[in-house]
Image 1 (tube, rainbow, N blue to C red):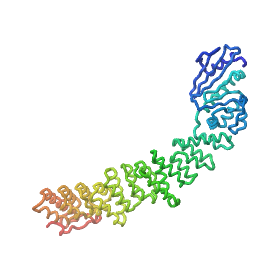
Image 2 (cartoon, rainbow, N blue to C red):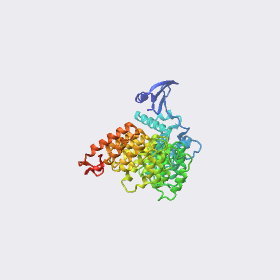
Image 3 (cartoon, rainbow, N blue to C red):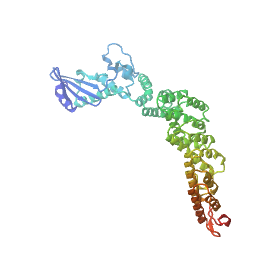
Image 4 (cartoon, rainbow, N blue to C red):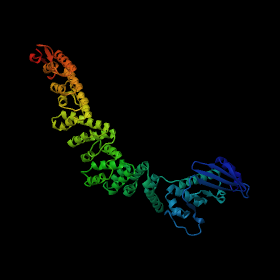
Length: 521
């Protein structure tokens, strides 16, 4: 193939190259690829004809230049520590830039091409001079060399990903110079990793290294995956962790700090210094007031809240109904009077969603306590119901019929709240005459009407004479007196006449004989 003019038309056609410019004694053929462009300078009218191949990367990397060592007249230091590579290839410039890009495959290919072919590889492009192309013996050989050179140019002009660099660095028996350059580059890249890159880097370190270096993990941003890796291979109480999570929070990432505090709170017994670190972090100005931090902390402890978390959670003030529901659920799970007191304080906060969340958990706690014997712990909830309509509504809808007597003892101050409670008592479940008569005598007109209607459906025979007495009074609302007469008649019809059998309201559904003393004579 000493005469390129005879075979290069076939090569140009195979490589799908098109003429792009005119040069002295020939043409420039060009093809642009996604990551590089291939130029063939074909001097067809020169005697003898010659061909020069130029491959230019799509991206220009920092300046570097690799040439055959035989072309270097002055002594050139060996940079890579790989004897076979350094004996064939000279790195003229950009040694720190080039070395971390050279993996084992790249070194072997460069050694073969540059050493055997005499190629020149730089950041601006790679070339095969006419003296080299004249030695090719077949079309397949030309195409193979061009494709290999293009691959090398792209590899050397593209920034390797962190995972690839870590794998190269962790490979045993690597060239010392390359390993050192890779180590320096990894150190430069780690602080700016994305969360996905950090996850891959941590996985590589944990899988490929028997003793992963803590210094590399400490250099990464404090993503949750990085902290988990740090806990596995290093000291979880390392003061650098606290510094990194606070730094992340100040930059807008609240999750690492919250997850770290949650992790420490769950291990205060097994890690003696954990409580001190939590206290230090908690004292960071503005941390506990950050809604994002509160949300993430509640998420980190909601499934199995540690006892050590209770004093901290009691201090938090939710800013949204979603966080309030989750935090209220966690606080109520402790079954502690101080947690109930904190939820009662929420009933005075301005957010309606927050008040509803607190009321729902307090009502659920009351229903659970009523199933037991310790009713004294419900005094605070009963007292709060006097001034909180939201709590009254939650209690009315949550407390079962079997404990209606406890509800009957509530005395809410607001008219709507009293009406809600009275209507619930009108559904029965306990002896409620005294409570309903209390509201009939002391409530507003709307409350008195609701009370007398409730007596008509849930009152016992003992309430009939009292209703008759109020219906015959000279003073008061005429509508209320009329309703009292109607309620007395309704109770009489419901409980039966003299000597008849009536269904007792409080005797568990048993049949009882109505007493003549309980009915109007």
